[in-house]
Length: 113
Image (cartoon, rainbow, N blue to C red; front, side, top):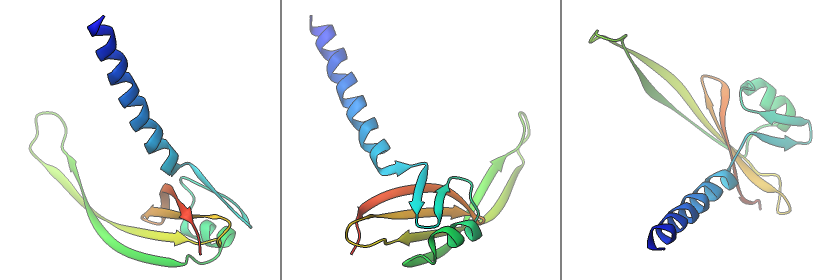
């Protein structure tokens, strides 16, 4: 009986954590000009949604290890943009992460202002 209870408790914790993560991240965002999805370009996002309320840009180094048995690695620098769209107090805000000009993450935030 204890084994079943432990398994059920672990399952509930895992499902709750998964539910929280999936509630924040999204695969698309609706704007007045259309739907933005993962993989869209920065130009497509601006055409559909207009300019973001805030925008920050940074760079990140991506390290790719060599093939099996080699000690070489390739280091690539990518541009990371973080945009926040505020659609007003009756709509959710969205944060988009773009890597090298393509949407790679869409996160739903709280209501706008």
